[in-house]
Amino acid sequence: MTPTKQRYLQLCHTQSDIQHHLPLLYSLARGNVVELGTRTGVSTAALLAGVEDHAGWVLSIDVDDCSELFKGHPQWEFMRGDSTDTGVAMAAYAKGAPFYLALIDTLHTTEQVSVELDLWWPHIAPGGTICVHDTETFPGVRRAITEFCDARGWSVTYVLPCNGMAVIEVPG
Image (cartoon, rainbow, N blue to C red; front, side, top):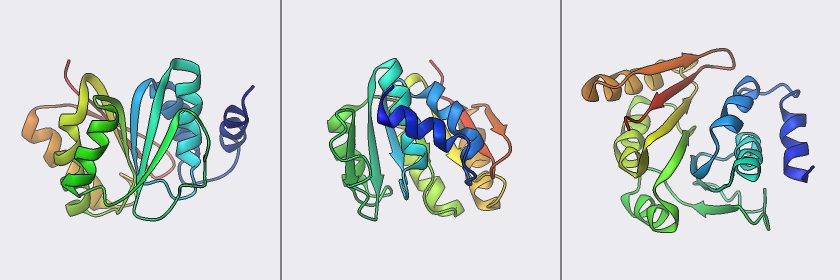
């Protein structure tokens, strides 16, 4: 068992604001994955364990320097930058798009999540998934998701607990 897989399994049993969603993220992590918002790397561990088992690569993007979290992992790259910046999205796209999973867990405002959804969904493969964390704790997050999905006629599934997670399937 890899150190990343051990860390992922440990985090599944460690209280956090995303703990109960880690198995979901692990199961969805296949192919190229982009993570917007890294912080301490809890979700990153689940995503990396998933791509270790299912093949793929994880690109984590954050405004803070999180480059040491999984430094040296052959299936992980960190990019420091603003996830609402078109230049960052284009650089990420050049590195590994299309992505089969995007996890959005950055600033929890309607404006931030709306811009991220609009900017990143074209880089998600048909049949891929967009997950957005903190849908229950921050009403603006849910509002942005509702407006985004309603405008496209897409469905969304909300998963509890741990502050809620939206799962948006990109039509195939």
